[in-house]
Length: 507
Image (cartoon, rainbow, N blue to C red; front, side, top):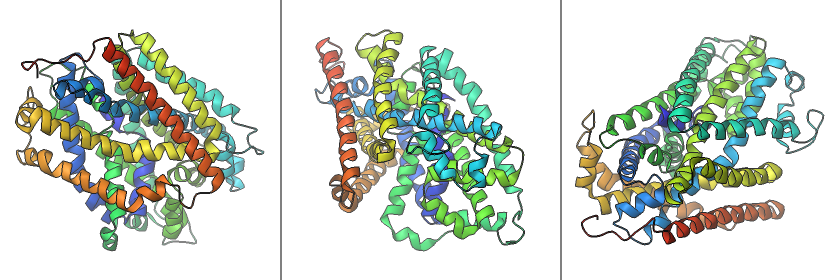
């Protein structure tokens, strides 16, 4: 349930429908399902197995797990930093977005954004709230910062309560709430019929057609396949280190095969069935297919925080539907963010002998400092830059590293046996071949095509305005500074003897 909570997040209800609408509708599901079968599920099993294996040797973070699996290779502990770096980088902006969701849930009940809806200025309302501009709705980001302090404290309070007392309880309470809210919204949208009298063709059937009818011509575009793989990584949280850390708390015979499949299935229900039936479908019902296409092009935040309030105003319910939507997003966000913070907390606890309280305090200081930078500079595109690297590119790199270490050092035969130790199901044997050959080849091809098509223009910021390019450079320096801090902590742990040389028998 905790891993499902980690996986089911904002991306299920905002990112996925936009990605599908932008990349061929139903045709997008072809590379999406292939990526799930050949990348997502195999990598989930690999990460669950590696995490439980590391936990049996007192390691829950990537540096310790990689060190143990490679038989004590000196470079492995530093390579494992990527599994700590990625999730916390996401947290640097993710908790701030959770602030938006909780705030807008409150605004829905109080009607605070109704004037902006009536004036068709929700984009200005959102920009004023998050501090991108000062306007008649907000004079600076002070409202957002006040609520951010509450959301930030909630995340770290849950973490302080521990795995069982905090994260597990949050998941047991939050996940049912999330699914109930999602089902209510999906049923409401799918029963809208044709609410705009002057446009009878703007109806649920045509809206579902827009979302799901395949545009097969898009399948020859490499970016569609890359987008599908990126969505699978983002939605399942594979390659980020969160699953590895959670699995490290399992006992040696606790199941990982069925647990990995169940968490994946829960996430896919939330994403495809619920996420694919709410936001973009509602937009097509009220704005037509052409209007929904334009909305999808403007991105996930525009869909969730600008377009949806207009739609809720048409649905009626005096803000109740809006409240359910934003509470859904908030619960999805907070169950994910605590899992994103946990890998660094576990590393500091395991490798630097910090108490859980001290590890949470140290992590919180880093988080607060860099999130403050994001809040202060969000209008310059710093959030988007950090999200691109931490949320799209690096998880694919990390996933490739994981599967290679699993295959080369643990070995597919021993790894397969470890995966089935205590398993409640038998994984189909063809997945042994997939994990050994198909998954790493798929990831190598994805990264190769991305490097050929996009690496150099992105790295050199071609076509980016000078002012924005400066802030992108600063953002990259901030990320590099955090990486240096992690390298220092790993080096310090090494000096304290936490990564000893392993005898041949131990290897």
